[in-house]
Length: 128
Image (cartoon, one colour):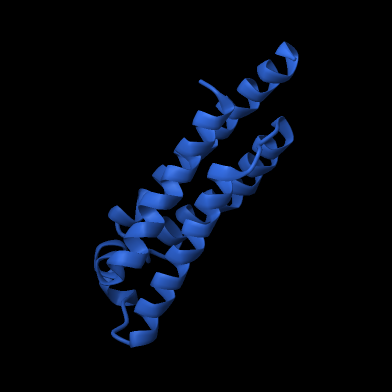
Protein backbone atom coordinates (compact mmCIF):
# COMPACT_ATOMS: atom_id res chain seq x y z
CA UNK A 1 0.00 0.00 0.00
CA UNK A 2 1.34 3.44 -0.86
CA UNK A 3 2.03 6.21 1.64
CA UNK A 4 -0.69 8.36 0.04
CA UNK A 5 -3.27 5.57 0.36
CA UNK A 6 -2.36 5.08 4.01
CA UNK A 7 -2.70 8.83 4.62
CA UNK A 8 -6.19 8.82 3.07
CA UNK A 9 -7.16 5.87 5.27
CA UNK A 10 -5.91 7.79 8.32
CA UNK A 11 -7.89 10.81 7.19
CA UNK A 12 -11.02 8.69 6.71
CA UNK A 13 -11.12 7.91 10.45
CA UNK A 14 -11.21 11.65 11.16
CA UNK A 15 -13.73 12.30 8.38
CA UNK A 16 -16.15 9.59 9.55
CA UNK A 17 -16.05 10.22 13.30
CA UNK A 18 -15.58 14.00 13.00
CA UNK A 19 -18.34 14.21 10.42
CA UNK A 20 -20.67 12.32 12.74
CA UNK A 21 -19.94 14.86 15.51
CA UNK A 22 -20.61 17.80 13.19
CA UNK A 23 -23.73 16.45 11.49
CA UNK A 24 -25.46 14.75 14.43
CA UNK A 25 -23.95 15.79 17.77
CA UNK A 26 -27.03 14.77 19.75
CA UNK A 27 -26.65 11.15 18.61
CA UNK A 28 -22.98 11.23 19.60
CA UNK A 29 -24.00 12.37 23.08
CA UNK A 30 -26.79 9.81 23.51
CA UNK A 31 -24.92 6.86 22.01
CA UNK A 32 -21.43 7.34 23.44
CA UNK A 33 -21.87 8.90 26.90
CA UNK A 34 -23.42 7.03 29.83
CA UNK A 35 -26.62 8.55 31.27
CA UNK A 36 -24.94 9.68 34.49
CA UNK A 37 -22.65 12.01 32.52
CA UNK A 38 -25.05 13.35 29.89
CA UNK A 39 -26.10 16.97 30.02
CA UNK A 40 -28.99 18.73 28.34
CA UNK A 41 -27.10 22.02 28.27
CA UNK A 42 -26.94 23.40 24.71
CA UNK A 43 -23.21 24.04 25.10
CA UNK A 44 -22.58 20.28 25.09
CA UNK A 45 -23.86 19.89 21.53
CA UNK A 46 -21.85 22.94 20.45
CA UNK A 47 -18.71 21.44 21.99
CA UNK A 48 -19.29 18.07 20.33
CA UNK A 49 -19.75 19.82 16.98
CA UNK A 50 -16.60 21.87 17.53
CA UNK A 51 -14.70 18.69 18.44
CA UNK A 52 -15.90 17.17 15.18
CA UNK A 53 -14.86 20.22 13.19
CA UNK A 54 -11.36 19.96 14.65
CA UNK A 55 -11.29 16.29 13.66
CA UNK A 56 -12.26 17.21 10.11
CA UNK A 57 -9.39 19.70 9.97
CA UNK A 58 -7.00 17.03 11.27
CA UNK A 59 -8.31 14.74 8.51
CA UNK A 60 -7.52 17.35 5.89
CA UNK A 61 -3.95 17.61 7.17
CA UNK A 62 -3.62 13.82 7.22
CA UNK A 63 -4.95 13.60 3.66
CA UNK A 64 -2.99 16.41 2.04
CA UNK A 65 0.32 16.74 3.89
CA UNK A 66 3.42 14.84 2.78
CA UNK A 67 4.08 12.20 5.40
CA UNK A 68 7.57 10.85 6.02
CA UNK A 69 8.69 7.98 8.23
CA UNK A 70 9.18 10.51 11.03
CA UNK A 71 5.61 11.78 10.57
CA UNK A 72 4.14 8.30 10.87
CA UNK A 73 6.32 7.59 13.91
CA UNK A 74 5.36 10.85 15.66
CA UNK A 75 1.67 10.37 14.78
CA UNK A 76 1.72 6.83 16.16
CA UNK A 77 3.43 7.90 19.37
CA UNK A 78 1.00 10.80 19.77
CA UNK A 79 -1.90 8.32 19.66
CA UNK A 80 -0.74 6.39 22.72
CA UNK A 81 -2.20 8.75 25.38
CA UNK A 82 -5.59 8.38 23.73
CA UNK A 83 -5.62 4.71 24.70
CA UNK A 84 -5.17 5.78 28.33
CA UNK A 85 -8.10 8.19 27.89
CA UNK A 86 -10.33 5.46 26.43
CA UNK A 87 -9.39 3.00 29.17
CA UNK A 88 -9.86 5.56 31.94
CA UNK A 89 -13.27 6.75 30.81
CA UNK A 90 -14.58 3.26 30.06
CA UNK A 91 -13.14 1.28 32.98
CA UNK A 92 -12.03 3.59 35.80
CA UNK A 93 -14.58 6.40 35.45
CA UNK A 94 -17.30 4.80 33.28
CA UNK A 95 -18.31 7.75 31.16
CA UNK A 96 -18.14 6.06 27.74
CA UNK A 97 -20.61 3.47 26.52
CA UNK A 98 -19.52 0.50 24.43
CA UNK A 99 -20.33 2.60 21.35
CA UNK A 100 -18.09 5.30 22.82
CA UNK A 101 -15.25 2.86 22.32
CA UNK A 102 -15.47 3.60 18.60
CA UNK A 103 -12.82 6.15 19.53
CA UNK A 104 -10.52 3.32 20.62
CA UNK A 105 -11.33 1.36 17.45
CA UNK A 106 -10.40 4.40 15.36
CA UNK A 107 -7.19 4.83 17.35
CA UNK A 108 -6.26 1.16 16.89
CA UNK A 109 -6.87 1.49 13.15
CA UNK A 110 -4.77 4.65 12.99
CA UNK A 111 -1.96 3.08 15.01
CA UNK A 112 -1.88 0.14 12.60
CA UNK A 113 -1.91 2.54 9.66
CA UNK A 114 0.98 4.49 11.21
CA UNK A 115 2.99 1.27 11.45
CA UNK A 116 2.14 0.42 7.83
CA UNK A 117 2.95 3.98 6.75
CA UNK A 118 6.28 3.91 8.56
CA UNK A 119 7.24 0.76 6.64
CA UNK A 120 5.88 2.03 3.32
CA UNK A 121 7.66 5.38 3.65
CA UNK A 122 10.92 3.54 4.29
CA UNK A 123 10.45 1.50 1.12
CA UNK A 124 9.64 4.60 -0.96
CA UNK A 125 12.82 6.30 0.27
CA UNK A 126 14.88 3.20 -0.54
CA UNK A 127 13.50 3.16 -4.10
CA UNK A 128 14.65 6.71 -4.83
